[in-house]
Image 1 (cartoon, rainbow, N blue to C red):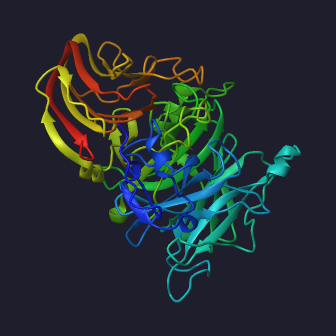
Image 2 (tube, rainbow, N blue to C red):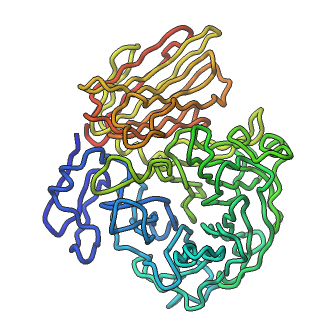
Amino acid sequence: MQLFRLLSLVFVCQLSLFSCTESTPEESEVAVSEATMKSEPHRPNFHFTPPGKWMNDPNGMVYYEGEYHLFYQHYPDSTVWGPMHWGHAVSKDMVNWEHLPIALYPDSLGYIFSGSAVIDWNNSSGFGKEGRPPMVAMFTYHNMEGEQAGREDYQYQGIAYSNDKGRTWTKYSGNPVIPNPGIKDFRDTKVIWDATREQWLMVLAAWDKVIFYASTDIKNWTKLSDFGQHYGAHGGVWECPDFFPMTVKGTDTQKWVLLLSLNPGGPNGGSATQYFVGDFDGKTFTLDPAFAEDVAVPEGEQGNPSQGIWLDYGRDNYAGVTWSDAPDNRRLFMGWMSNWNYAQVVPTASWRSAMTLPRELSLVGTESGYRLLTPPVKELESLRSTRVEIPAAGSIPFYETGTELVLEFALSAENGTAVIELRNTLGEVYQIGFNLESNQFFSDRTHAGKSDFSELFASNIHYAPRASSNPKLKMHLYFDVASAELFADGGSTNITDIFFPNADFSEAKLILEGGVKLVKGEAFSLFGG
């Protein structure tokens, strides 16, 4: 059931964003009619969605003066991909979002592709005013005429700055700041401040590798090195890198983490995000030896999913990056909840795509080497309403406004399964669970509703290996109107999948077999369900 509220024609409000923003349609550029909102099937209740039209990659994620900024790839004139703009929203908690006007528009240099934003605290760029640091965005220009002409130098990097907390932007007159060196796919800049060496550090994707650059003023950049041609999965184009230091949990050891999205070539098909862990000396990124052994591409091979270590094994978590300057040194992540295999044809009417739930990354040492944990952020607990204890298998609470399940199981040496099954009044079924014999999680949307829009959407069951060897299995799940997100064993294995039932799922069942026993279970209704 979709719930919407419209306070007046000058308010924009939808349940999926948990906020009403007072503005005129001209000011907001996102006004949506009451009739349109009420007629939109599959609109999420607690995931970020655009008010209308097309959305893909999250961009420019930065925290400043109490606000989490989310910019995103946006085409305001259609529900399919087109000339890219940067849409914009802000939040105080990553849960309740306020829409703002479009931040960056295409210009004579091209479309505005993916990039990042930072706060230039020392005003090294000279863009600041009145003693306040500027917000600086770095992004890829995409020259469509150059691409259509068959050139290879149609992508290059530009910058823009804001002196009013991201509300208005000025593009730098010296753009592009990094010309194209003759690489067809040369894009998706991520900038961070390298405090150890007091320099701006930037990484961008270049087809089958990433390239690192450094700068002292964000305007003039020097190439440092490249990485990646001989490591990881290479079934498609590398995109949307992110690069940052992390302290290994429970130690004083610092490592550097590189996130890297790949399309296609994911572990279950299409788009996905892999990661790498190693060391950075100010110029070169070198993989940790154990990690390098796991992801090395054998000589003569192109790289396949088995050579990637994946952030999420579902089909619908792509192009995710982290917030700059997040408080308390937290490393906070959000991805695009779709897949390029079918993103432009999914059965939504006036809008397309949502973002994943925000997640907090931590780096841990395991028997297999360094690995990321990516559980949901604690702020999501504010959505909880009713709490019900689950004493045993069988029917379990399910809330149409959103359901959160926290389950713990004891595993024996026997075979067995734990399955959470959703059903609707039409008999459509979605299942997600764990198979003890194969030691794998699975997500099955093959009978979960609409799928005729793409032969790739429901063509297979999605599998994910269990990373933990603990005899206690933990499964933390969120179900929205059209999505499921599994965080298993503290976020060591994740699955994010979307689905499109012909009637909203209305009941749930926990099915246990063999050597999987329920130890503890809780169900929470979300957003007042």
